[in-house]
Length: 89
Image (cartoon, rainbow, N blue to C red; front, side, top):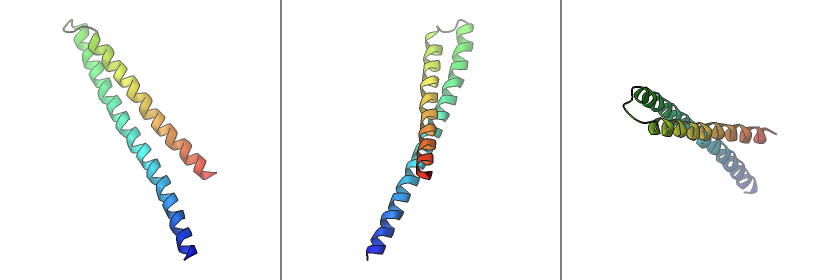
């Protein structure tokens, strides 16, 4: 009985760790995807700004959006890597 409980705790801890890593990586992937979408929007806004169709506000907003989401994406992958390295010790 004790061995079964110990095995269940070990499997549970391992599954929790793996699911946390997976969550961080999937979240980071979504953030990187949104970064790419924001960069494409910034490019379109820049082209329209240069053609004097719009002001610079949309361009700056798209750049800010892209930079913020790039930070979130990189930090999510960095945290996943850090967590994986700590578990390996």
